[in-house]
Every structure is written in C-alpha cells, then in structure tokens.
Amino acid sequence: MSRNNRGRREDLSWAVRKDGRALWTINANPRSSVYGESLRKFSGTEYRRWDPSRSKLGAAMIRTKRDPALLLPFEGDTILYLGAGHGTSVSHLHDHLCGQDNHQGGRLVCVDLATRCLRDLTHLAKYRPGLIPVLGDARKFEAWGVLIPRKVKWLFQDVSQAGQVEIFIKAANRFLADGGVGLLSLKAASERWTGDEEAQVFANVEIALEKAGLVVEEGIDLAGFEDNHMLFAVRKPRNI
Ligand SMILES: C[S@@+](CC[C@H](N)C(=O)[O-])C[C@H]1O[C@@H](n2cnc3c(N)ncnc32)[C@H](O)[C@@H]1O
Image (cartoon, rainbow, N blue to C red; front, side):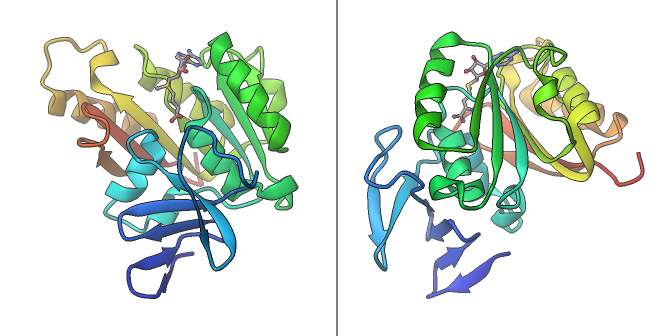
C-alpha cells in the first residue's frame, strides 16, 4: 500500500521509498552496494538508490501513471524472474521481498542462461538469503520448473530476445496464479516484426497478450531510461 509521507516522499512498501523522482530500498546487506549505487541513511536506516536507468523495473516505477506500488510483489512472497542479468533489479526486489537475513521469508527464483550472470547472482545470493539463482533457459522450464512447486503471484520477464512474447505467455500459463501480476519488459528491436513501426510492434504485443487471456493493465513507455522499451503490466484473470 502506498502512503504519502512528508510531501514528495512516499513509502511504496516497508522497504521501498520514492523521494521525488528517486527510488530507494532498505539495504538487506548493509554497508554494501551491488552495482555502484549510492547508499544513504533516512532516520538511521540505510537505503540503496535504485537507479532507473539501470533497471527497467525501476524505470517503470517512475514512469507508471498508476500507483507504483501496484508493480511490486507482496513482501514474503515467492516470485519468478526470467532474465535476471547481473542482479541489478533483482537486488532491489530482494530488499523488498526478503529484507536482511530474509526476515520477510520471501523467495526470489532468478533464471538466466548466461554463466557470467549466474556467477554474479550466486555471489549476491551468499549475502542475500531467499535469492535463488538458476542457470536455465526461460523457454525450457521443464529443466527448472520444479523449483516453483506452486504458482506465483508475481512474474517478471526481461530476456531481450526474439520470441519474448511467446516465452512470457507460456511462462504465465505455467507459473502465474489466477489474479497474479505479470510484467513483461519488451525491447521492440528484438521482435520478429521487422519493418513495423515501433508503435505497431507494441500494439501487436498487446493484442497477443489479450488473445492469450491476459488483461493488459498498462503499457509503460520506458523511453528516456531505456529507449525502444515498453513494460507491459498484465493480470491473469481469476477464471481462466
Ligand atoms: C537485459 S538483461 C536483464 C537485466 C535485468 N533484468 C535487470 O534489470 O537487472 C537480459 C538477460 O536475459 C538473459 N536471457 C536472454 N535470453 C534468455 C533465455 N532464453 N532464458 C533466460 N535468460 C535469458 C540474458 O542472459 C541477459 O542476462
């Protein structure tokens, strides 16, 4: 839930704070930054700056026209993140979902197919219990799906490769609970619809998502932070 706090300062969750146009999360691994982000204390508690130009989720939280808290999972939940990269967004999600020593009891299953990413994620996981790095292909979930025995309420995908929409739809069918939130970060240039204007590409994606039975709640244009990128926020209806 979002609550206004001292003018422009807003707590989006117990751990995520919006201060004007800046985002901060309470550091689950105090005195340590993950990707060179700055650390700062608010009332004696250490926060890490969440850089929206390094994180599409962060950019979407700044750019959304709705309450940014709607883009976050519930703390203590189990979530699935496809295309975790080196852990930039994942680390902030971990701050919110798990907190220090995972006192919130969250589980963040992070899949990436690059071994160099897995090395960084594995290092991160040493200091961040609840973060579960998985070396795997988002398209081949038979290999790692066993780690998600129950459907999740929050799914994020940022794989920046051709066929992103099909991968997302399959993952949502298999792993997203009814009523759950799915976030698809889409890079227009990765899609197969060559020659289409970018706006048409995004419109086609929206049609494909709706056709798959997902409700598109918002398409968030990340231009300025990540050009040619749109983040689609969808919800899986309760009755499909
Ligand atoms: C743009 S980066 C992710 C950045 C990350 N989401 C963040 O915000 O910090 C895209 C990642 O997707 C991974 N990737 C690409 N295709 C994939 C696939 N089929 N399955 C899993 N990961 C994939 C790449 O290795 C790369 O690390």
